Length: 167
Image (cartoon, rainbow, N blue to C red; front, side, top):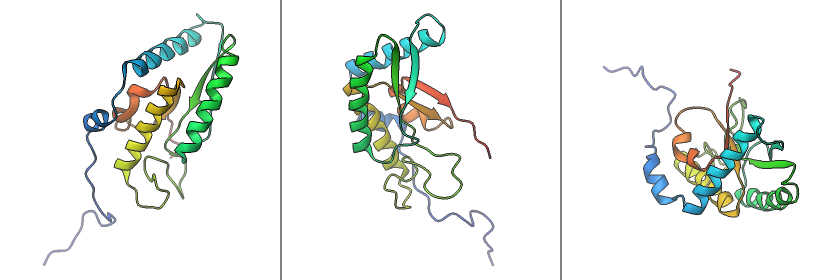
């Protein structure tokens, strides 16, 4: 007689897409790479006090609607151009909600907001959004919570925060 003692609360297992495969599906163009590199350089110069502008990370708590995020990004790009002499604006593009104990855990974990937890789809949507924003000329900032997710989209991030879990 076999009595199960392992994975008693696991509903299903799905293989995670390899980061290189996702990066091949949604590659960085030279123009995007230049934007990311230049945005990182500007943010670093501001933080080091070598640039007098204020670094402003602005945007929603977390992304759940990519169409709305792109619209927001377009508006932010226009405002950034207007105030570029005084401010360096980076769009806050957070994909996960680590401090939420009940409810939706974020775009990567549940991109359909339907409790299907299609993480592969979430990673694809997240990378695609960052790529689209960069193609629009909008630098993006996000929160890194672990060492896995950044492998899928860190090359598209202009500014990163290290997430601090409270649990």
